[in-house]
Length: 201
Image (cartoon, rainbow, N blue to C red; front, side, top):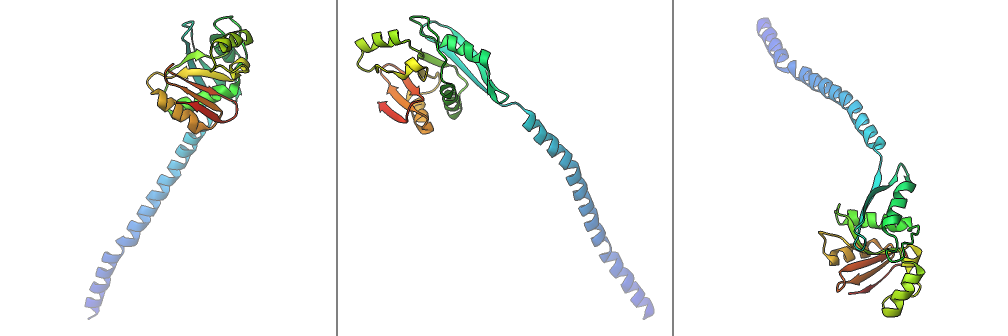
């Protein structure tokens, strides 16, 4: 009887002993993996945090054929030299006058490009207009405002290769960041940083 009890006790131990050992092994292994993962996650987070966020824009002036591709915002600020390069390409092609374009307009265009998932350059029909140019255009076209936001560097007429004009308009309207004019017969969309409104179509 004693021998049977010893045998049963030994059998019980041999069947039940490995279970907690296995659990301990798994817990220890998982803990080790977690400890190893922590530095990796921390370094990945640090890399993302250190990676500089930049805003880029590209333009082709359809009247002059000039192009510019610039990182206009980096390290938490606008880049003066890059802005100057963009002002030059977006100047009044009739008079050669340059103007400081509203940086909010650049941010609007940047968001518009991201919303459409495009990396193509904006084709520019009209950006800055000198008062003299605007007066001349207004005299021949009822659709040109006498106090156009183009004369304040707050408006631009564009198209985006690879994207339908209607999609460009729709994306601009969804941003709710200013005025949106739709000119399908002339193949461009007007965007500005004035009050939120829309026309055309």
